[in-house]
Amino acid sequence: MPVTESTPLRNPYWRYSRDKIACEDLLVTAYREEGFPATIVRPSHTYDETLVPFDGGWTVLGRMLAGKPVIVHGDGTSLWTLTHHDDFARAFVPLLGHPRTLGEAIHITSDDVLTWNQIAWSLAAALGVTARLVHVPSDAIAAADPDWGAGLLGDKAHSMVFDNAKLRAIVPGWRAVIPFERGARQIVEWYLADPARQVTDAALDAVMDKLAAAWTV
Image 1 (cartoon, rainbow, N blue to C red):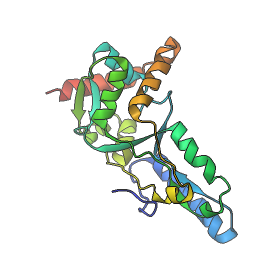
Image 2 (cartoon, rainbow, N blue to C red):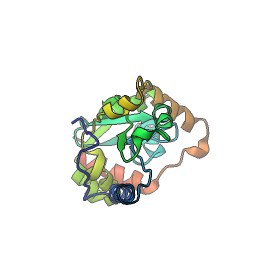
Image 3 (cartoon, rainbow, N blue to C red):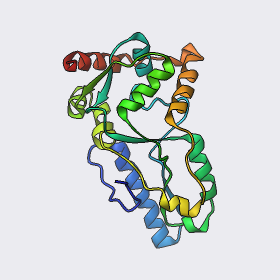
Image 4 (cartoon, rainbow, N blue to C red):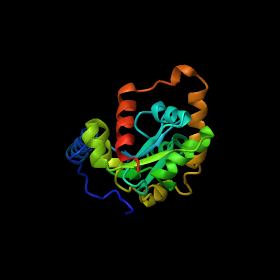
């Protein structure tokens, strides 16, 4: 770390990531062979008020409100970068049509790096509750729910901190200014504003109950 744009792309665990790599390969080939004016933007984990960073969306917030344990992969100390969509937009728009972006891959991420424990605590604080965290190895989560596990083993279980020097060279003065603590409050306010948004994934909720029972110390 930090991850740069030249870091090799490979992900044997998660199809979503492999499909993104394939899209990049297609664009790079078109640029090199046909002069197609492609720019690749890599935003990592960008969120708005509708997107809870944990799998399950409202399911996790509902568990926090109910005093139920919340599953956090590993020991919760791996590093993760969350970028508010407003910060992303302020960086993305100046790249449009910019001649220095053609044929290039460019990161747009915040410098707001948190542990997964801190992400959970921020959401709980926004809800006005104390989070009960149960730490479960990513392999065990993958065994219980392969879809959930693929996103962990192929992405979230790894510390991800990004180098944005290339972006700042093209968009001087840009920096992300919205911390996740503020974003967490926006997320909670959005979900609490309308009960129709508070939909629990019953199957995933049951998996979380099972994991919590097995791994609670």
